[in-house]
Image (tube, rainbow, N blue to C red):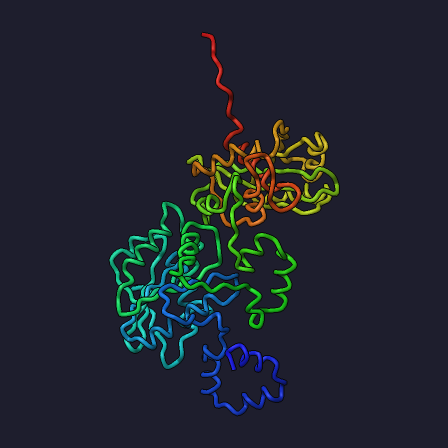
Length: 443
């Protein structure tokens, strides 16, 4: 009987048999059963067979990646008193809060008789037999230059800091120090994102250097609330964001697109690193009362001249009143200085609808003389120059950006890139709106 079969038996057992089984166990045995990972784990959460050196779990959110990593680390420590384990998160804070102290972290998974001592000031875990683990930040790759390890667990490598190639430097420094003992091994857990490090690892896996486990959120449906799973299916369904974050699918870039996911990931920030001196709301109104979507994107610019995409407040299939109210709410929430709205499809009607929602709203109507893709090209160049940041993740907006083609086509989701167009209007206003053609002046 496999682990899955045993778990399924417990789930499907009638209440009487289940109660009888539990009643026959002592309190100590009940606690032991609850922590018997090889019994409860799904087969894909257990280390793969064979003589692997790197095990990559690339799966959707809620798959059980963190639990698999924490259980593996505890097993390594229990079976190898000389183990020296590196625990690398995107930051020290995340390594501690998720990998060590989280609900599925190392401390929560440790048995009462073999629980490590965590010394936060030293960023160190020590098990009763002498095995140790140290915490590191992938954002500080030099911290991994020098220390030696026998094992490592790298968590969420897809969100490691890609600025100045920090993620790949941290990975490479770790590899060079993974030389203790006779059988050094590394586990990396992540939700797939098209970042340079993960792309590189997937290529190495094609050569057989890395063992990959793939999976989706729904593989762990026994341990997740049915309401959560239903909400995820309804909200994301077959969307690109759902395929990445839930199904664990690595999304490929479209050849010839103005934006690609690697470029966007390199421009991402968890929080804004400077305050905005000016904020605008870009709006791409629906062409009719029954339009598919109204693009509403909030962007700001800092004193350094770097712009940041702050929010995507777009609404689907809105009435004129509802999209105008969404614009007004975005203005109020972000204390924006101006609304920049395309007026090609509605002319003064666009302004009238917005005024009805908030008569004090500062509005600038813009008229498109070129197509969406042509307008987007100079904005895409700003991303390539490192002058735009995304504060957080905007899945639907980023899907549309990655569907805008240099040849003028749109190959992204939906019939029209309304969110992307709203972003273009906002960033054009902030960074390109005051440009003037050069001219000769007479003195």
